Image (tube, rainbow, N blue to C red; front, side):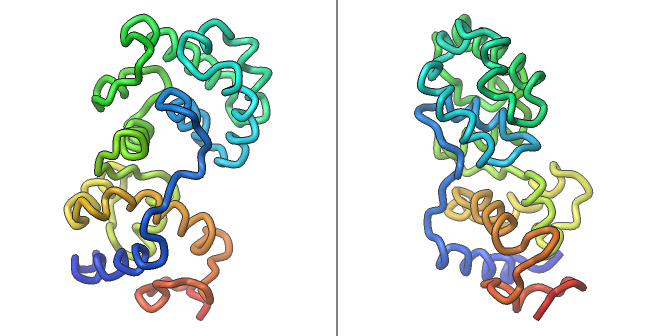
Length: 211
């Protein structure tokens, strides 16, 4: 694992390139953001957005989503991977939010993680994007990039999250997930990294580096 000074230098570059990156998921409020994040598991943001544009026109609150029901919801999200299970989770969490939280999405991490289909990463993303909390969500992109750039050698997402939380100041934790996700999605791609256009190539010592 490289030292904190070098890690911060890399994040300085990310910050200079894109000072305030945002989620590529489309949403209207905290509830629709939560649903979009749940639907995005093992799916692309693009596929989720294509499905939710019409869905959120008619079901943008827990009450409306509950009224829609599992079978009708499936019709809207059937182009998304694992849609059967995701539909069940979305309706179940909508019922809980409507019944126990007056239709509001809670800010508390534990309360979020208690909802069907909402894991630690999903709760972290929601709290970061909607509630502006300095959380560190580790998905497959973040996990891969953290190892590639030697931010962490953690064997689990929890270990990588802890390593990043230790070294990154709050100002960077606000955007760290977005920077690493977008970097992994468009530049440092798993199959064919675009090293020629990589802003932090000089820090990379990966065996498959192309420049």
